[in-house]
Length: 561
Ligand SMILES: Cc1ncc(C[n+]2csc(CCOP(=O)(O)OP(=O)(O)O)c2C)c(N)n1
Ligand SMILES: [Mg+2]
Image 1 (tube, helix red, strand yellow):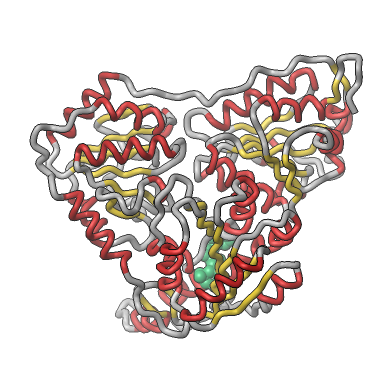
Image 2 (cartoon, rainbow, N blue to C red):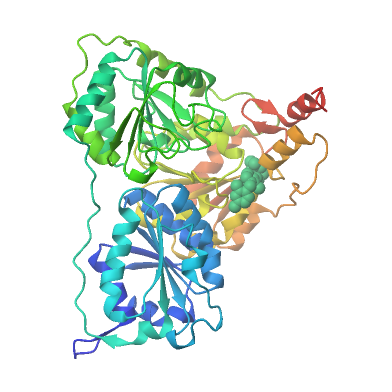
């Protein structure tokens, strides 16, 4: 309740700061620990999405950070709420996503007694978050929240955790709002851009690699214009395929799990690698085998917004401390050499990419997810979102989707299961006019399937495709590779996912044959409801290029055993 003596409660001041900083959506699971902050949403213009589990709420906030480049916001209660939210914090960390988690805390007068659900957030989130703090005095809310926005967004973005002692939120004080924050751009220097031009002019087989965060459609467009002018082949890193139009004549494909062998060979053969925005972590670097550590053999240019990431693993020949947005803009000033020695390489790389992704590989059983993704990519407009979590099902999504817009693929670089459903809820909440499809594994889906209720509650019509193969397929695959025939702890007895959807108030269908998918998809969209289409998949269909039995037999034939 607003008072007319110029004072506000800590809770009101806090929510007013979110408005000042441009927040439009907040995701929460309520808790008595932050009731005064919750109350302030009652008469303020922020869309609040109440979720079923804090993991879902935190992942939704993370997905908002990915899509907008501004911190996604979640509110959760203390202790169990905070620990439930931790997967979202970890994803924001590994995916370099700006996000702020506000979490309840016990009253100031009882701290350090291990009061009910008390946690030391600085200790618990200290190594996972960019900054974990607690607000002791409501007068400092504008200052600390402003810093939280800057910290989450600046340099290499990441998560910030702000704890809110219960009595601090109810205290009334008079304090002015902070001025609105603006993300800080880090620009490349003229001399660095001149050096980059020199390196490009001297190169025989250069390649661009795009990853990380701090991109925008404008930056992606600038990067594509640069690639065209230089006829430069450009690849993307794991789950960052949306940074370059897949149908652009310079697109070479994505360097993730099980990449196109021709792309891998191309990167290995390059004499100049320009990595923009990414860290070239374990997955895109093929378990750190792609480049020598610490000194790559190829001429290596690393463009990154976080100074601390440059030289952390790979020592670059040219370090450019800049955000991809600013770097891409500066690329407009570079001149290609009179004669591009690698002319033809971009076109060759692109045709290798097209060949690799053109047609689905044959699969055992009635369902071929590759064919379904190929069908979907032809149906969906370029601004559609594809959301997924982790599991072998995602290999078909990665390989056969052709992302054409910045942000069109919403998936965790961190490899966290359970991400697709909350990400889809968040995207549909933010962009109600854009189609959203979530592809989930049967294991993956049920890690946050409860958020299907959130989709129903907010009337968010999107389609979830559940790849029901009856096991934690990825782990079974590794099991058969390492311990062939010794199946343990990987089988799943699944619910009827279509009935699950209907029980929640959504639309549900089961599809057993690829040919039946288009009609099922049309019916799901026509229902106007959140929908689940469950694909009954042959467990043998473990990868686009192999079967489970083939993997087991190869392992059994291995003389090392
Ligand atoms: C939160 C989380 N827990 C566990 C894992 C380890 N893990 C990776 S993939 C996977 C199995 C995925 O199973 P499913 O969703 O059914 O997909 P499938 O591999 O069968 O296609 C597991 C357990 C993980 N990546 N994330
Ligand atoms: Mg599975």
